[in-house]
Length: 369
Image 1 (cartoon, rainbow, N blue to C red):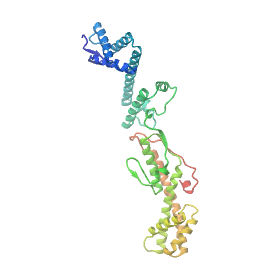
Image 2 (cartoon, one colour; image 1 turned 90 degrees about the vertical axis):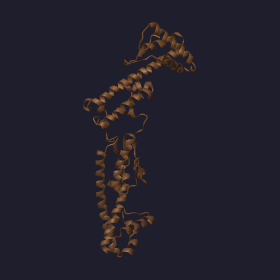
Image 3 (cartoon, rainbow, N blue to C red; image 1 turned 180 degrees about the horizontal axis):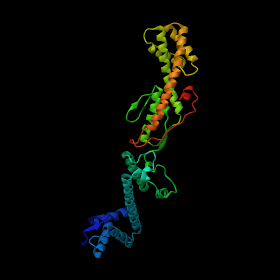
Image 4 (cartoon, one colour; image 1 turned 180 degrees about the vertical axis):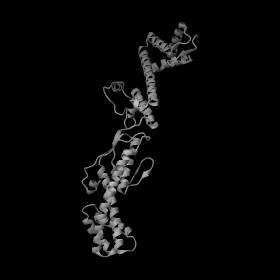
């Protein structure tokens, strides 16, 4: 045999191997539903080698060898197999072209500043000059190339490349749905897990606001696109209610302690509030609290004495609880806006797309939010 090696497309010289020619022909037979043509594939490979030996080139190009394979298949009447082989060559050429293009993109991401690279400024929420921002772009661009080559139908991929259609967030095509509305009332009920730890059900408006941000951030790390809380004021209103009950109980305890002295009665008052709710379904409320106060008073007097003084204590407790709950809610919402505008996700390189919808809850607690 005159041949000892072949030249690859990238210029590398590798040992010549006739089995690789036979293997490629065998795959073409398999692609045309002609299994068991292994012996024929080897005979055709021998024919290709014979032609190469007659040509006398000790180091032929791989492209020339593949041209000869096509010709030998056609000359021997295997037209469909030749077409399958041509298609295989075309797919391999595309893969090489894609790989070359991807490497050029990676070079741009690595060595070009964001201000000079449209690619690194493509997503305004990602700082393309940070290490993690660049890493996200590496993954994003690699995923796009993969979907273009192996997942999308050729006509769809071509339409996307040529701008006839646009596939939004192509880099996340098979990974997750995009954009999500979070039901925080359902989420907070009984507590929830972020995947890295379990959080108990919140009992204060500040905790409600903080956990709303955590839910958005946690979900953003697992899901692409924007995160929205569609009924924010309804969900937060539950936190306001719990906060008000606690504030009312604490202020009533202070008033009773001032009137009666003795030990701190907050534990007893907690039990009384629970008893009233169990019997009547009533709890202390921001507005229209008279019904609750009337149901509570008969349970206070046996323990703490003077009915008229206890009515004053109830009014004091309600007045102070409204003011303190309003202040706590204001601070919680202020912290929420701060957290939404400063927290990061996706490996610290992106600010989550966060939307909160509010304004339709007409309850006093919802309006306070």
